[in-house]
Image (cartoon, rainbow, N blue to C red; front, side, top):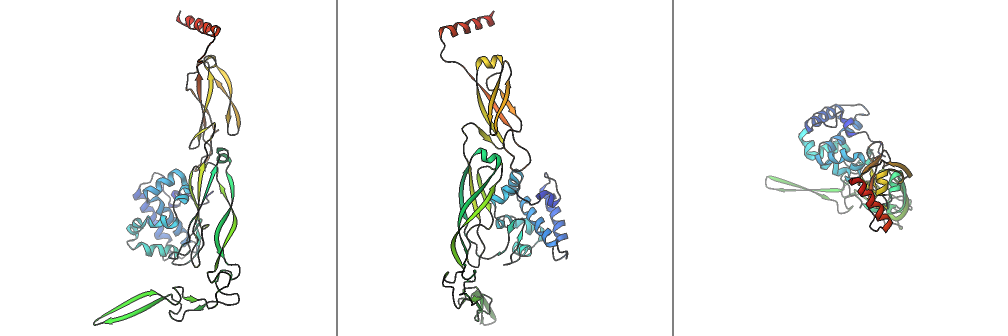
Length: 366
C-alpha cells in the first residue's frame, strides 16, 4: 500500500477545487519551499512533494485517474518522467521559464535520490529496459490480497568487479582527452564569427573515465546476467490492469534501472460476476417458493449466507448482502453482494401437477 500523502492534502485544496485554485495554491507553496528561497533542511523535500502533487492535479487526464484509483492508479500507469513531462506547459505557465531548468531544480541532473517511493536519480542518463510479468489471480485472492514470488531475470553488478568494470585491484583513470568531462569542445573561427561545437569524447565514449584493465568476467561492462527471487504484494481489491514497480527492471552499465510492469488479470468466477467492489450472484428459486416465501443459503466468497425470500417475490428481485463484496482498492470498506432471484418455471408437468395448477389458477380467477 502507498504511504504517500493524498495530493489534495499536500496542496491544501478540496477535491472539487478548480484548476485555477490548484495553480494558485501550488504557486504559493512552491515559492514558500523553493530551496533558493527557503534554507530549511526539509524545504527541498516539501518542494518536491508539492510539485509532484501539482503535476498530477494540473493535468485533467492524470487527475481523473487519481480521483478514481488514487496513488495505485497513477503509480501503475505513469513513470516519473511521464508525470512531469506531461505537465511541462503547466510548470512553464507558473514559473515563466523553461521546463528543463525547473526539472533540474527539482531533481538535479545526474544526481540520485529517492522521493515519494520513486527513484529520481540519473535524470539524463540512459535507462534500462522495462521487464513485463503476467499473472492471473482468482476473486478469492482479490478478496484477501496475495504475495507473489517470482524469479526475475535482470542484469546485476558483476560480483567480480563489484560493478566497476575494472579488473579486481585496479580502477578507472580520468580521460586525458576530455579531462573527465565526457565531452570535447571544438572552436573554429571564420572571419568575424566563432563556432563552438561540443561532442561526446570518442576516447572514453562520453564517460569521462577509461578502464585500462577490463574485468575478465564481465568484459568491462560491470554487469552480468542473473536470476533473483523477488516478491511483491498484490493488494486486496485489485482490478485487471498494468501496475508498475519502479526500478525493478533491467539494469545497464552507468544507467538507471528500468521498471517491472506487472500485468494482472482477474480470472472469471464460476458463481460470481464482478463490478468494481460489488459482486453479483443469481439464485434459482421455484415459482412456488417465490410465491410462498422461503429461506435460502447462498454462497459468498467467504462461505455461505442466509437470505429470506419474501412471499410474493417477483422474478429478478434483488437482495443486497451489505459488505459481502470485495475490498475497495482506493478507500476503506468493502462493496456489497447482490443476489438476483431467478424464478424457474417448470416446462414439463405430469397430469396431477397440471391439475393442481389449473385448480390454483381457477381459484384466483373466481
